Structure formats: structure tokens, C-alpha cells
Length: 334
Image (cartoon, rainbow, N blue to C red):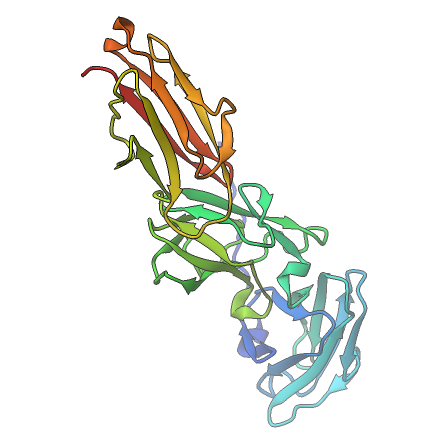
């Protein structure tokens, strides 16, 4: 069997000698650039005279948008100090894609450019989702060393879908560079729009910044909170206990169990769930297993032979911190 390979090489264009600037930023060859809606955008082309003695700018695809150019589209523009200049203003309130084409008498094939027309405030274009849920106005909670997934919900007919965007962490209090990490790396442009964020095991606050290349369009989330996994202290039988270690409850005695916040955190409730009962029985007061933080639980393990060995297990979860949980293992083998 013979396979015939098609020649996929694209002949070099004379326009590669030209330079395109949008709002003062260079546009790489064949790259899609950004025009900001509702405002004037400076478009500048520098080209040698053998490529363009004059340039005619055409709008060949408007994407249903209102686009105004000065000088007007389809008119020949002479260079000023070797540069061709236009002001392009897309109408406010609507985003989309358009195609601009530069024509010259010296080059047979025109220079075509796709452009993304969006708001300078990316909050008009997307919602930032953390674990599939929009970040609330008061920010989100991140647990130290726990990875959360950030994605986007597109608000304008997927205009930004597959557009290069970058995510960054703006540190506010208590954090230093490296305390918030991401895959892909922070500040790296990506078209996938899915980031895996992990904070260090420390306390602090930060905002997340989403941006296009050159920060032409930007948005920031509300201030988020990074918390260590030790948000609460465990106090049992009047002694502060270390998470993860077995607890040894004296039998037939009313024992206090309380969770105290280590810092100024939002008010929350917590749930005590008995996963495995004490073999010889036990009581916990109050009887409702969902209580405000700071509630003193009264735990009494009955004094009988059945409770002379074995263990029981209580799991504690926190309403405002869904990723945090304590497994309390009470060991009866004295």
C-alpha cells in the first residue's frame, strides 16, 4: 500500500515583514488579538514601502457586532513616519469575534487577522467556579495542602472558550510567593481553562486574578481565605489533644469534648457522627448531633466489662469547612 503525503508547508507571506500593534502591544504572527468593546483601540501597522505604500483596512466578518473605524474601513491610508494608524471602537455590551483584513497594492494576498472583542472586565465574560460552584461575594475557603479545581462558566456564548487566559494569585495577608500553587503554573497562558490550586499549610488571604495576554482584560475574585488544617483545637477531658492520636476515656465519668477555633473564623456549626459505638454503651449530650462551634459535649462511657477493651469512633465535620474532618478514635484498651 502506498501513502501519498500532502505537502503541508505554507509559503512565507510578505506580510511577515510587517508588525502589528494593538493598544501598544505586539501581536505575534497569525495570533488572534483582543479588541476591547465600548472603547477606542489603537491599531498600528509598520511595514516597509515595498510591502505597503498605502493600506486599506477591511472588516470582512463583523460577528454581528457594531464596529467603527477611524479612518473608515475600506479607505486607503497613507503612512505617517512609516506607520499606519487606526482607531477601532466596537460597540459596548456585546462580545464576539471579527475578522480584519489589511490590503495593499504591492502585495497580492491580503493580511487577515481574527480578533476577539470582549469587555476589559472579564467578570462580564465569565464566572469563576471552584469545585463547580461560583466563588461567593465574601470569598472562598481553601484548606492547606488540599487541592481544589477552578473552572470557568462562559457568559457570552462561549466567546472566551479556547482563548488564551492566565491565572495568578494576588497575595493579601500572611502569605509569600509560593504559598499558592497551580497546575498549570500561575501566570501561564492556557486555552484549557482548568486549574488545580493548592495552598500551603498556613493562614492567609489572597485573591485570584484571571487575565488575557498583556492584561488587556482582567478580573479578580473576592478575597479568599487559606487556612491550616488546624483551624480548631480539640479539648478532651480538660486537656488539649493532638489530632490523629487515640483518646483514652475513663469509664463511668462525664467527660467534656469541645472544639475551639484557633483564629477569628466565620461562625460555623459542626456535626458529631458516631461511626462505631462503644461496645458496652455510651451517652453523648446534647443529643442533637449538629451544634454551634464551642459547644461542650458531655461524653459518658458506661463502666462495664464490655467497655474494658476495644474502641469507638466519632467523626467531626464542619459546616463552613467541607474539606476538614477529624476522626476521633477512643481506645478502651487501658
